[in-house]
Structure formats: C-alpha cells, structure tokens
Image 1 (cartoon, rainbow, N blue to C red):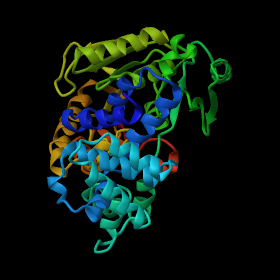
Image 2 (spheres, rainbow, N blue to C red):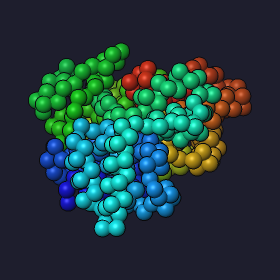
Image 3 (cartoon, rainbow, N blue to C red):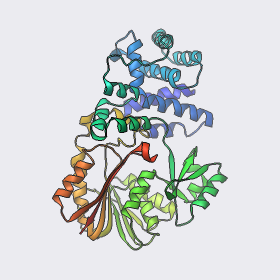
Image 4 (cartoon, rainbow, N blue to C red):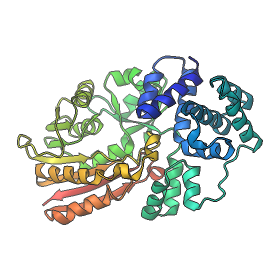
Length: 418
C-alpha cells in the first residue's frame, strides 16, 4: 500500500469510525521511512484540517451534486485538490496518482474535476458569501464557531485565531526537575539529534524541533521530560502548589498536569489523580513511574461525585472535559462539530466544579480550566459558580489565545477559599 492509498484508508476510517486524526495517524505510521511518514502525515492532516475549503472547491467544479458523490470518490477529490493547492507536487503527479486510486466508474469524473480546478487557476471563489462565511471557507471552520468567536472576542482576534488554527502545532516538553535541569535536557536531546530551545518566560519548558517519535527518544525513556503544551504548564503554575501540600487533580488523564504539579512540589506531599476509566488511569500510573513522581496516586473516579475518602486539599485542579476549540490545530475534526453536539457540556462542567469545591480546605486554591475558547464553557460557568459560592473569591480569569502564546487556546480561573 503506497502513501496515497494509506491516506485514503485513514480518511475513510476517520470519517466512518470517528477516530481522532492524531490517534489514527500515529497507529498507521508506526512503521515506514521518515519520508513516507512525512508525506502521509502532511496529506492526511492537510485534508482533515482543510476539509470545508476543499468541499467548497469541489462544489464549484463538480457536475455531480455534492451529497451524491460517493464517499471514497469524495476523499480522493479532497486529496487531489489539497495536493494541487497546498503541496509542492507537480500537477500531473497529483492528478494521475489520485485518479489511479479510483474505481473504474469514477476515474473520468475525478480527472475532470481536478483538471477544471487547474484550468480555473487553482483559486477559491468566495462569491455570494458574507464576511463570516468567507472566513469559514477560507480557514475551514464551522460558521457557528466563527460567529461565536467574533461576538466574544472581536473580528481581529477571531481572524488571528483562525490563522493560528492551521498548520502543525508546536511540541513542548516539560523538564523533569526532579532529575535534571533545562541545560541537561537540551544536551540529552541533542544526542538524539533533536534541537530544543527554552520557551520565552518559562525556564522549565522547551520547544522541540522535529522530534519525530517522542517515545523512542532516550531522554523520554529515561524520564527526563514529558510532553505538555505551554498553556497547560502555565495552568499548573497558576495553581502554585508547595512542598508538603495535598493536591487533587480531578480529571487527570493522561497525567501531564499531575506530573508537573508533583515536580513543582519537589515530589514531597500528597497527590491524588482521578479519571473515569481504568485504561486512562493506567496512563497516569505508567507516566508517574517513568518520571519518578511517586507521590502521584491515580484512581478511577467520577469527578462529579463526592468521595468522602478523599482528604481536604490545599490545591484542587478542575480541568474539565470540554469542546476542545482551543486545540483544533491538534484535532482539526473538532471544528466541524455542530453546536448542538456541545450543548450538554456546561452542565457537566458546572457539576464537576461544584463537586471540586468540597475538597478545598480553608485558604486553599481551586483552578478551573478548559482547552476551549467558548464563553458558555468558560466565563459563564465560572461566573455562575462565583455567584453561588461567595466563600470562594475569584482571583483571576483568563483566556489564552494561541496566536499570542504559541501554545494551545486555554482558559483558566483561579479561586481562593476564604
């Protein structure tokens, strides 16, 4: 199976099985040359993140009604147009290799659409679209998201967020300060031919350049770091635990925040991490073992249900399940969700936050966080909680935008219990 065949197979599975793109891709490219992996990754992610743009072009050049195009034919059209529009591939190769994967009955149709696109100058037509519609097509993002962001944050910020949502995301490493410092880790990564640079403003965060398979790096296997976006790292720093504290991470898997909190505590104190599923709890346990953060105890637990056996804590992190609109460059399929698919999330988030307050001892800190940029899940939840719980003083509430930080879109709110 050549690279384009693999991409077609991945796209079909992602659409029919609903698998996240990063998970599907990682499973598919575990073997093969670096060149093949790079091509497959670029084409698969590219088609996924530009799907609305590609479909807009197909509608313009197709003689068949869009809803009547067969699924595999549609995926091939997306692949062909993406190669023509966004990849440095000869037009003849992009067309011929794409057509060669088609069934006999669709070869002529696919060839005709791709050739028509080339004759038209390989441009995107925005005729008949309003401003928000044009942004939706240009950046391949559901119009309701564009409209919501424009209302909440303004058109200038919205355009910057949309621009930042495309392309491969950066890879950040959190230095395991229990066993090394940033200089040590930079040296160890260089031994594996990976360049690492300090992130501006954070001495224990490194930006990795083309790290390849993280799990194969010696520095990773030896527990010198874990992968964690800078926005997530700053969330842990906001909670600011001390040595000897008791810390609770209610929605912890895969464990990055729990590990960083334990490192901030110099591995001294108590740390309880919970997740709803046993398989995800094992991810936390395995990660803690690799890093040597042995104060982290991970258990199965429903974050919305109070447990009397959990001790009062100095610090409680409530990083709730969310729509993920801050990480769409990592999981681009998220931006095609319908608004109704997310309507139950604020109620769940509020229920978890209401439960989290029961674990905070007097004078303790509670952080509510999401990796989304959506007021319904962020400011609205926090303001509702603050109004109902005057004993918890809201100290800070902040949106982190990806174009400003270089990290994921993120929201944090810090409470102190008086």
